[in-house]
Length: 85
Image 1 (cartoon, rainbow, N blue to C red):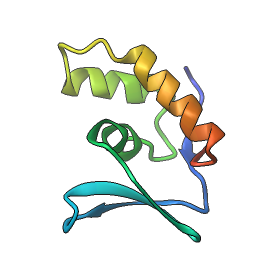
Image 2: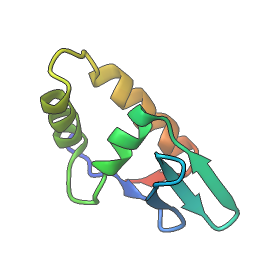
Image 3: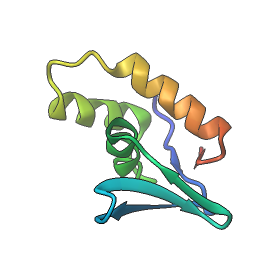
Image 4: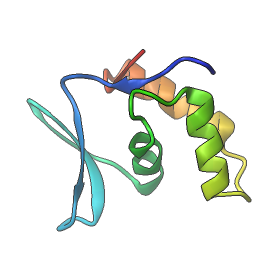
């Protein structure tokens, strides 16, 4: 949990006001993110550890048990090439 994820250099996170959602842009296209994925990826800044991301989300959503969901999402994001460590 002390590893620091960052967005792949081929991807850029951007808020699309017209769609009212976060999207992940890459050279061949775009991924529309649901609100949970947007909340997680907005916290990936290349400086925060995974633990810091989870802690920040726990502060934002104190009633949610989200650690395992966040870790699973981060694994999937890495497999899709969105994140690098």
